[in-house]
Length: 123
Image 1 (cartoon, rainbow, N blue to C red):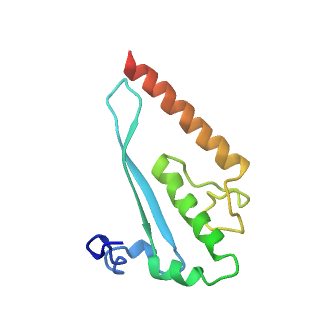
Image 2 (cartoon, rainbow, N blue to C red):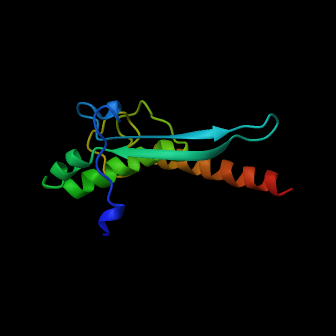
């Protein structure tokens, strides 16, 4: 990779939410016009690169990192955290390496909502 495009990991003061055991954060912003559906207009994910580099050395490190990225992309897409520890969108990972049935159902609802919003906008 061209060194001009390399980004340094965020400093603790730049990403205070990455303190402690937190491996990443994700979220999105939306726009809303009264009478129209909410529309996601921006999203961002921040990862603890040095911490993830250490995670790569674990026996299932790459699977853990993939799960972290999937977990943090959920809120970018509009998926919320859940109270069910069997789902990847639970606040703390309890051994899930992929989306659970509830996670997939939430993503399907978001996808259907997005298709409905696009149909309304196309009119």
